Length: 108
Image 1 (cartoon, one colour):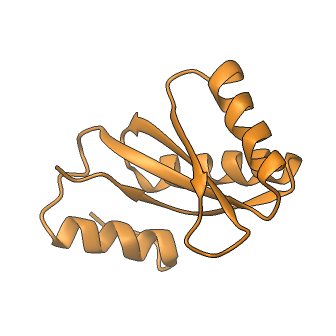
Image 2 (spheres, rainbow, N blue to C red):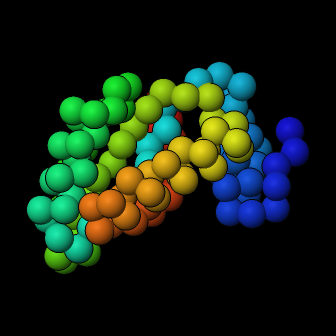
């Protein structure tokens, strides 16, 4: 497969080079960070009540006074799908005064 020459393209290329089959749905986790615990909780609650198909994990970050909302969804990890989902999470996180901090996959 050919991927664009950007961060998402590089990650997908590395995954493919590592033998991960990107033609099958995988569990993809999108990370949101917040400086205010209440904002992180609000986004986690929103995801649990308003969005279906996501597993949501709210927890303190390793960095003091930062909170994470990790949202996992099973999806085909195509470049276009990843970019679209990152855009969605960037908009959502901004509504709660946070920001999207990338993505990863869960490998068994």
